[in-house]
Image (cartoon, helix red, strand yellow):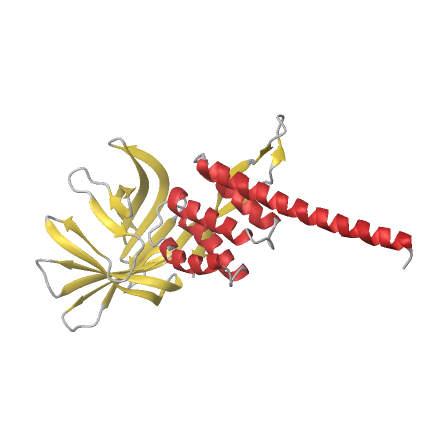
Length: 314
């Protein structure tokens, strides 16, 4: 091999080493900037930076950790379980052998939102016997408000008997730790404790009586007029004053309650109400790559989730 060829080969080698160094340096810069934002409690900025890191350097060793950190922030701080679940699923499918994939499998269980109350959701339920001809309720989540100084999510419920509107009321919900609570000045009621793990139990008072709620089944496939739903949870309600008589509510992740039944003793369950149609907001997160600001420092521009409605009808 001639001397100039050796020089050319040596130059190529140096260029490859330089490129590898630059890639590693850039990955560390992007990932490090995400950690810096997280330490400053700039949650959304940190989420976007982590996602940008994983998308820009998908083959790097830090990509699964970047997505995992984004997912954890979405779950713990933002409390957007749908977006967190999406990031966990990406880790599991894209990096199945990584340690973060194993962690994501466990954390995924905590992301199923069985009663979403954020704005944009709509449900129509009706009596199972006539498919809503006798009884029908239309519930829409209209957004946030303040009640008695507390931030709440507002659900508007309109009830029909046949074609006649018999009531049109508002319900107010808020989160207290892991509990979803229906606001009532005299008697706040815990509606659900998430995650809905098997045998989870809580108590509430209805009409002056104590009611015991128990998660009795998970992972069910349930078919109602609105369609077939998977990974459903079944919650039993029992009045302490009426042992042996139960009401069961079935919830689908990301949708909400889809079926209500009753049972007593050894009698089989009787369907009472079921979901007829529903609409959920589809969330889109737009990630814009870091750009240089006037001071020469990198800065992530963030656009918060944009909601689009998705109709679900049978």
